[in-house]
Amino acid sequence: MNDIHRIAVIGLGYIGLPTAAVFAANGIEVVGVDINKAAVDSINRGRPHFGEPNLNALVRRVVEAGALRATLDAEPADAFIIAVPTPITGHGIAARPDISYVEAAPREIAPVLAAGNLVILESTSPVGTTERIAAILAELRPDLGFPQDRGDLADVQIAHCPERVLPGRILEEVVNNARVIGGMTRKCAQRALALYKVIVRGDCRLTTARTAELAKLSENAFRDVNIAFANELANICDTLSINVWELIAMANLHPRVNILQPGPGVGGHCIAVDPWFIVASAPEQARLITQARLINDARPGQIRDQVRAAAAAIAIARPVIACLGLSYKRDVDDLRESPAVDVVRLLGEAGFADLAVVEPHIARLPAELAAVGARLEDFDRALADADIVLLLVDHMGFRQVDRGRLQGKIVIDTRGVW
Image (cartoon, rainbow, N blue to C red):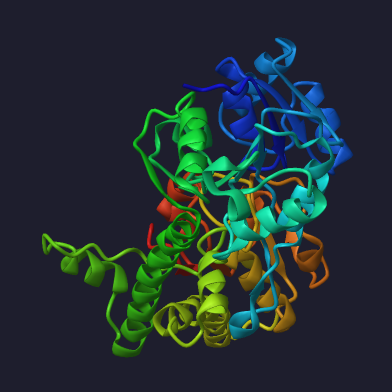
């Protein structure tokens, strides 16, 4: 039975705010905590600070009902859910997880922590991070007992329950997806389970905190390896003059084969990042995972080389290149770790001076692209002026383009939709 009536959600980004809003809509009082004052002010006006289907209406409803409010400072609560970023520093094999935001969260909540509280880490994290949170809290609050010392008799229960949602479908998946609930003890897991059953209709499985941490990382590493296989096939097909899209369609006729689709690389804050957490923890054992990451990270440079070869073939001194799409996946505004951004940057650095970028989901270019001379352009004008059309993201509007408008242009389709 759930005995939690007030939750503090630490971090109001792509995961934290939807989670906070869903709990608030299900009868739990929620206070959201974030260091971004603009985001806090926007939420308190009932307006999310990022785009996500149906989130606007839900946040407005729960804020107006008084069930959700945002603040810059932690307040007392029955449970604390940590949903802060876990980026990486460095690139390639030098990439390392940055858990500084996660380590800051227990320092934020320690002054208001009380016996009987539950602390849940939702942020995707390297193995051992939940134990790190417990250690920080124990150091700051020696008056309380924690699971690493007191087991089931601890005053504060601590668990890791990694998010498993897809941007564009977050509100649906927060409720319907299965959840892995990893406790530092069995009691910790059971307490977290009781809370999540308030909102989750999907299957909830109990395990240890370390297993839950590695389970989330493994899910994304699995997909990264599969995408790397598809991208390696694309490279092989280029060498052998074979259409990779047709090849994959033929191979997937086998009832036990499901090859994913190649593309310009892998983006987003999950698949492009989480495998490096595993590599950093066990580099000698994670050889396949490492190689998959390197294959996918190399794709933007290979796309740049394809454009360079196409430009040489038409012998135009200053070709207009229409770069269609910047987000890491279709029909969202999320540019985090996007390979499309990398492709455009590499083209600018390679000397292509006329880069017309079309991204209908953003209002201005990232600074790194403006710095190499790219410009944000209207779709119709970019397509009309283009000598080379480079499809980087398969937004619905791009998929439905009249093929006749592509006549007479060199087309490089990295998504296989044309």
